[in-house]
Length: 84
Image (tube, rainbow, N blue to C red):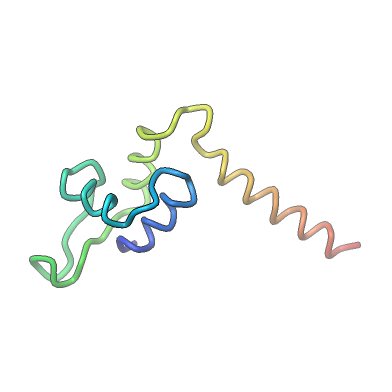
């Protein structure tokens, strides 16, 4: 995923409201990422598991994964409502 996609996830999780913070975390090595196309030309590529690892460190264990579960439950509610 690219930085914008990672930012959207981190913002939804309540971890940041700034894409610049995400870029800083990448530069500092807090979020693992690889450069695409050389020095800043292609941006960064972030693996999903690396972002999840970062989120696990930044998010209390009791909260981690909760928002994913909420989204899953909301989808299931919508499905059930459509079946009525």
